[in-house]
Image 1 (tube, helix red, strand yellow):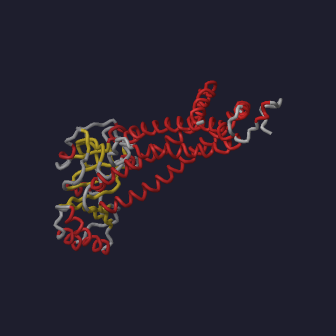
Image 2: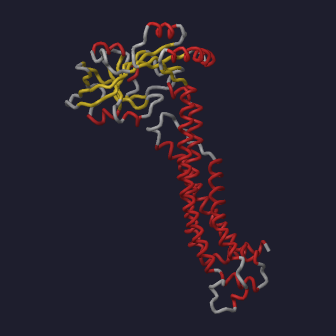
Length: 388
């Protein structure tokens, strides 16, 4: 009986294979979306775990909207950590062609970032920043004003030589600099600009790196409560991982809902196509019943066709999802602050194909159950296309 059902399903599909394959593509987009979203979530979670320290660039970040007091400085010095300092605020920059632009000025001292690298073009930009009168500009500024390394830019009526263009900074996304592109200078050059005074809005940051991860955890647990009692904001690697994990889960739920909705719409289209296909096969089903086939045997023939259609669409969707696993991280490389791995992950593929196939079969089940009620007498009726 099983062998007959397979042979009959194959032979009966000869006249409509192209149409059936076309119908099966209705679930392809939904399955591809589920696979791509699931694989990207796993890749991003893996990247967060593997590159956690580059998310912050230090073991501990302490920030305030006021200069650090002597008490805070003493507390930071007693931690025994290597420190880097930064003062950041918004101001205007004047370019050689007299163009002006709102920028986010960052005066930096020390060897920050301690984890990861500041990517510049040319690569010597970070080393040049330690010299006086040098500046690293966000690449968007160079493109916007047609400038290049070696030219000058004025900040606070003080000329700076452009050392390099900034491509990426650990823990920051390039897209976040679209409103006020970043400009890095040495902290030693900041007093000469005369841009900060009473009432100025600026952020003061201290980056700390401890000698070992075990020591870092111990010192952070003792320092953070004391610093927060003084009104300071702190950020650690674990805190950044936790915040990103929550944001990632929320984003995954939303995208997964979108993918699931597209899969449901595809399944509805698939169910309509199957209903139309079975309506054309009522006469064939009635003939099979006359030849001695049971109602289950007649419907099994078309269940195999439906299963083949569903698997074809789901497999094509899974293959598209595999392609998205490689393409999506590369497309988002300039936006995300992490290097997303592009290794193929089969678990999301199997999950997406399984869910897509299962939902489509469930949507096709009512039509198949109605097909079981096809009567052998339909072969004798004039209205053979009516099931009564």
